Image (cartoon, rainbow, N blue to C red; front, side, top):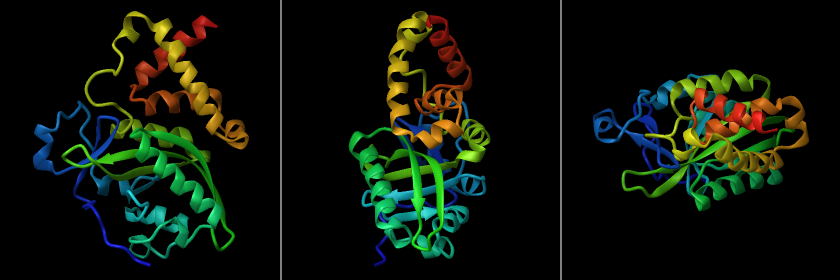
Amino acid sequence: MRRNHTFDSSEELLVQRWGSGIKLLRTTDINQSGANEISPPSVRHLFVMPINFYFLNTESVIQNMSERTANICGFLDRNDAIGTTARATLTKESATFSIKHNEEVINQQSIIIKDENFSRLDDSTFSVVAIKFPLFNSNGKIIGVFGCSLVKDSLAQSLNLLINSGLLVAPGTLENHSYSSQPGFNSIIQQHKFDNLCVTLSEQTKTSISKREIECLFYLAKGKSARETSELIDAVNNLI
């Protein structure tokens, strides 16, 4: 059954990191948004990247997605996907896992990374590392989920594209300023959280992605820049 849209995700809108997630802005709003140094990409710009991007409402109903994403999910095209959920093309088990991931993002109001292995109703299968962000409106209320799914074979390339887009850069300054003065202490805390991330990734993913790539994925999703990520990883290694 098709359902109505709940928010605007037009291609001219800008996609910007905001708080613990993402906010959609118009060009006229960017000067009042507290934008970071990296110019936020538009929805149109993201949709032509070789990454699977999509917008869901709080009920996991598809609001918009790139043609690439629609095709890999088993839809005829993007218009065929809008207004449906993962249940339209995925097996019950795969759809339930994906929707639960969305619900965790909304309930915890934070970015959550998971290894997702999908089985379509036509028996096709594919595996990705899914990074899902809470999507906020102008009043700071969660209205849905913004997701990007990275194919494991091109993870490094995809991460580089996300870094350049600014989506893995937290707005403003670092969330923990003590890191620069006490790198060892903060790195230990971050390493503990990194270990938790590793638990969520399957053994298949951990063998196809290096530990360094998983570390980079974790720190970047926490809002660290490429340089800060490198320093944090070096600090942890120096403590070992």
